[in-house]
Length: 303
Length: 107
Image 1 (cartoon, each protein chain N blue to C red):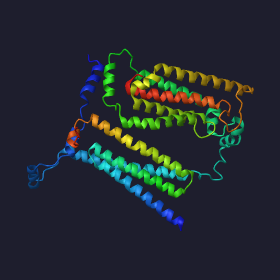
Image 2 (image 1 turned 60 degrees about the vertical axis):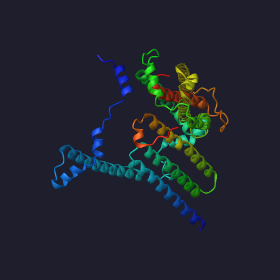
Image 3 (image 1 turned 90 degrees about the vertical axis):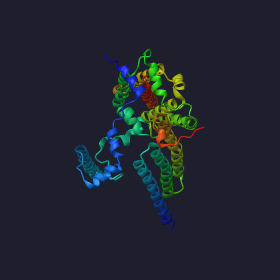
Image 4 (image 1 turned 135 degrees about the vertical axis):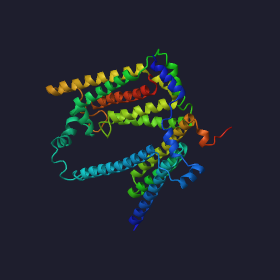
């Protein structure tokens, strides 16, 4: 019986067979002089499979053009039915939207309406979403993670380091310039989620992209020092558990009409909007860690 | 009068951007070797984005938006050549038939 790992090894060492040799040779095909002369004198029939392929190509082109035209027509037709942007009658039907716009600032003390909508008015939804993210991470880990004592760890290192740039000066200069900006920008988006557009999800995505860039630029050893399996467990568990606790406290006080510890504060400062700031931080931590871990798992199967 | 000059400048810049991007698309589709296609894509990308950003700046006038356009272009100016550099590095490392298409520089 053939072990799957030996198949993988053979694939890595020999590479895959190029699939479209025949097609390529037909594309590059130029008739040799003798054949061309013969073709002039006795025009022969084309081989059957080339004819079939040409018909298939024509069919493919025609059907793709028709599909594209249909799709464009449907989309444009639907867009023309939308209410005009900023029109006076646009919001009349939307009871909920008007409620948010009129009472959002007073209820939550956040100048960015979107953040209280996703974290406070629809808190159940976002709480579940963060856990869905974590469950997705767990499933990817089940599928892709190698055990550390796996015999193929040398194989993995070979597979990765062959194709990745190492000690590239251009890349490192780029990292020195751009990485601090990316991290500061991500933190800014997270911490100003209740004041300006942004919040935990988008800021966490920016932070996660920054971590991924750090790994790609400075290599595995530098990234492993500050982010390994333990860090991942610690950060995502702490963030999720505190998120759930905060949100549970919010649900209980809100349901019973009790006074919450987190007051709305001065509108327009960072520490306003009740617990929105803390929730944003937790969501950002979960999202960034999840993004980075997904990348790492797909890259080499382990941290 | 000045409005018209600005509008015409805007149109010309957008047209230049469209031409440049069209050329890069043409290059990507017509060339066969990956480094050639990369060359066509990356050079015209930077020029086309510069033209689009300039057109937007001309259209909006001189205000705080101009600085944002400048920042966008600066970001593109850093990232576009870098991504092409990485792709070309990958081609250099992984293409076994490289010498058939390109002449390698030797020390």
